[in-house]
Image 1 (tube, one colour):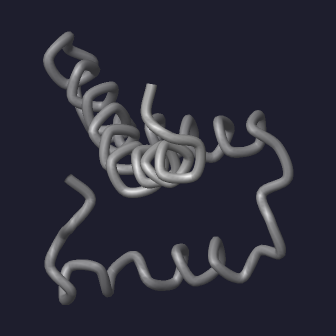
Image 2: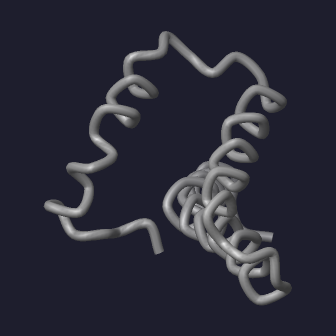
Length: 86
């Protein structure tokens, strides 16, 4: 999952700060572009084998699962509370 130790995060602070400093990521396509660039960067120094390529896909899927758990599911619960259960 995306929860690495605080001291391990330091090596990425320059780039993550630049991302947070952006006014916005304007479109879904822009977001997909940025994610894809990171996926490609991960593979630059790795052998292009199925298991490693698969790791990249699963890393992104695990992040999507965590995003869904923290944000989308919460929104669904709010809508259920507002509008009543099915």
